[in-house]
Length: 450
Ligand code: B12
Ligand code: SF4
Image (cartoon, rainbow, N blue to C red):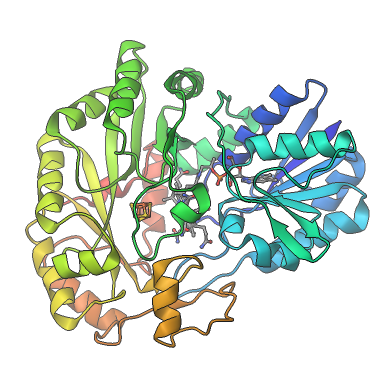
């Protein structure tokens, strides 16, 4: 059986990202089907070969296309990728009889609508390991596929999206050498997951929609073994792609201790909630290689944090930032300015309070991207920002009407703080290029920390 796995993601912002889904899927498929021959096609790497030529010469039985991003989530320079994805599906369907299966984080936000739009044969919503194996097995053996959890298919009365009740415990996988060489060279970063799912209810967030609300930790030994193999090849910076890393403290301690005991010389970074982690845990993480934290903070104003559905306060944000300063862990706060409930006063408060946070950097995003199945979606419909039948495949933003969200105003407020604010339109590509050419690795915003 021949399978072609395709990464359709051409987005290079803020840097090209290793298509982790392909590695998880390839390992799962190889475990399920000993006779499976798997080839990978990555639009970033295989630019010189046309996908249709690869399909015609390889003649796969199945083509799995991974759709990571729908758009670039940049209000001031919107890019939408779904038309390229549709063209890709059309192209492979024109030149082959292969069964086309799509999936991915972006896809999973709009499974029903995108499935119809793309014209694939099948799709998977959420994590793909078990579903793709069960689907291929059913198709190979001519068995009914309609009860497989997480799959999307054409039913008699339209598109069917099967709910998911169980999840994969995670598998050990090796980075694909060809892919990892390219991404290591171009982004200086490898990636892996330690857990899936998020139980929080931030009003705008699609992560629980994609990964579910039940947190599943992946077997620590498997994750460590993936890291160990990459580090042995000199790829020693990892970003953990967990929606939030600092949940399940016991698991995290076990995982960090394993990295330390195995003497794996890795540096790592992850998304953290700016709350709920003790100094001694941060110390342990640092000992295991933690060098960078990206905080999902969103605002420094308590009333806004409450309206955004964040379950922490500015005092906790400040404590965590100070701990990082003490431990010399680089950290950056990601913010959403002008979302639901932002006022002139709260915006001012956010800029003012940034002055109280030492040794960090601020990445503000303007407005809230509206995703289906989120509380923000209901608010936006109720307030007439979007209509109920808007499919949201073209990005829409919720912007507070009470504040002046022009770049000019925001940058003026930011400048008055004397702190390092990095707006989405700042071109730091030349600086990053220079640092990369000097062999610097990791997210590189550490050079902006002040
Ligand atoms: C970590 C992360 C980042 C990190 C990545 C760091 C790194 N070195 O990897 C950073 C911060 C850099 C980042 C940047 C961006 N990100 Co981001 N990111 C994520 C996050 C949290 C996890 C993605 C991930 O790697 N998951 C782990 C892998 C293994 O899971 P997966 O890819 O989903 O694959 C599984 C399933 O989807 C499925 N599957 C996948 N493909 C296929 C294919 C088939 C055939 C099948 C059957 C199944 C299947 O099976 C896989 C294994 O279970 C997601 C949100 C989320 N919780 O999913 C957003 C997310 C993917 N990002 C998103 C976006 C938009 C971006 C940016 C464009 C933002 C920006 N303007 O900077 C950039 C683009 C980066 C790029 N070059 O592509 C969006 C995409 C949706 C959209 N609106 O388009 C998401 C969904 C967040 C959101 N807003 O909802 N991101
Ligand atoms: S913003 Fe972070 S904490 Fe909130 S729901 Fe999304 S992933 Fe969870």
